[in-house]
Length: 166
Length: 184
Image (tube, rainbow over all chains, first blue to last red; front, side, top):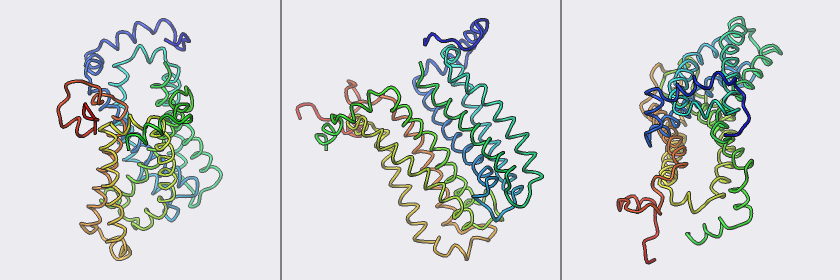
């Protein structure tokens, strides 16, 4: 399995344990479960992508520029939360079904590191800037949006790559 | 058709694409990530038509400001999608999920066409109403459903559950997949 190892050896038994959980086993043994959950995970990507873009485009000074920044970010928020919830709800069973493969998968760890950073950045730094946002986009809002887009792109690209790397 | 696709799949670039260890995954990843750009912005527009978000923002503003991004996403999806098809044309042609996806494209396209030719022409008259006209809401709902189903069907193309070489499949599956009948 690739040979390269990213995570500490001591974590392996835990991942083996996760793979034998009821959910992990059920998803692995079903023909349809993984593809269907994966497809819904993709729909979540669309929803999350839409919500992230709506706010970040505005912070970049494009998109819905006639609306105040704080308003756009506020409008996007429920869909952002729904997108994140849908991704977790579908992502966890997918992970459980192949936890050991993920343990050996570098892309998986890239995603596991970038995901909390992206979440923290979105719900802390970006929110803080958006709430006290100026009427027009400035270098600070643009920087925040660029970092947010970069982080979410990393999460999504690493996520897709889990399936390609052995 | 069959012979054309066989020829297409035997061209050097098609073979190289299918066998590449880096180009194919990169093209496929671009296709998937463009979902976030294309479907993300389409969905926000559809949700506005349904009156589920940004109710105080005029419809023409949401559509007008998001459409350039939808177009970029659409272009990436079409280019990468055609390349993926080109890498293995015969297989995709006989894949029932691919066929379902093509039918759904027609539905989504027709829906967008009728919306823009129809009620959207008078968007300035209704875009600020608290509840949008039924036809506008219906267009949003159909778009949302069609694109969601296209993504699901697209994801399922990856599986060979109903390939023509699987023995003992129900007749309708072989019909839907356009499998060559034995003796042809």
